[in-house]
Image (tube, rainbow, N blue to C red; front, side, top):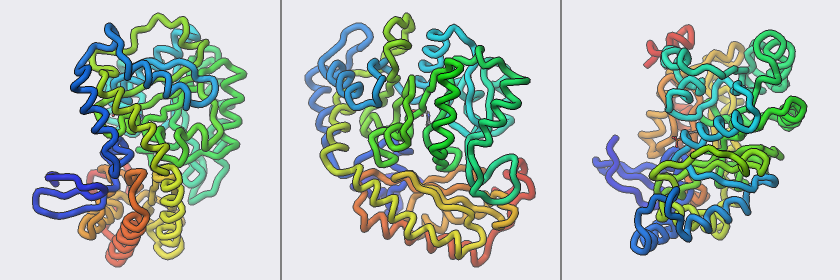
Length: 425
Ligand code: PMP
């Protein structure tokens, strides 16, 4: 598909086909119904233009720094410039190591953090063959499974399971046999697993993980690159799930769909005395900062957060019944406008169904909905702009439900093992 234009919440390709936009530039364009970000950037482009913020600071940069700290979770009083999500995550790992003098980072299988060499090894959504190419050059990482109440690695069949079992594994196995707790600098975690399939851990998980962080002195690094700026119905997922991070990372939606920009928010203890250089030439150019600033106000002024919660309810109402009606639908999950439909070969084995997933994506496209899919995955995602009118969103969910039913009437063959998934493509 080659895009020709975007009109509000619709995307048009060069052949004249129109699609409801459930991609939002992969979560980077929170609002499609407002020109405030573009207007602010245009004006700033004319008044200040490109500046190297690490050397010559400017007004929009100072204002953005103050504003983002003001609305961030309690305890996060400092912000460092960044250019993208990847660079924000990289910077946070450096900060956690600097603050603690410890080498190791604890991550979770299924997460995604970016495409640098280190994060390709640290992002376990990549194929093993890709990860291993880079992992041998990226020491200092240890992984446990992401908490998942539906699909838990030590259980057979479908949940709901107690998702804190992964912390039993950490305490009883990893910390005993693999890595000393006092060697861990930070815990890198997405508040809701995104690329790994829209999974929101339980309150019990967060409580116990945070207690472990306090006990062992681990810095809690919350990757809000995709959840931040309203995606989950609160400005940050940390608010919705009662998480108190030591470091919080922003990218994607922080830009307001404008120019690339990211941020590392952190505590006084970690950031006040840091000697690290975390920015770079293009980090926080004045127009990107002006756009990000306008975006924060626009999200708060336009009732986008309330709309997100309405979309969550609508998605669960329209797509939720598929779990009862269709053998291939294992689970439907939503955290605000972050919505996933998990496809399985059957409800007993819950073997993943990537071929079914691909077929649903194509059927939804034919019905005018562009959702998020990736090769080899089996969770279809709807990630609309936060301000999509609820009628259009409701219609889109109905199209996806129809696409699922159509695919279920003649399901494609699936690979026997997930590692054979290329055969299903
Ligand atoms: N963290 C998360 C949770 C992400 O989803 C992504 C991108 N999908 C990144 C980090 C990397 O961000 P970027 O593509 O801006 O480098």
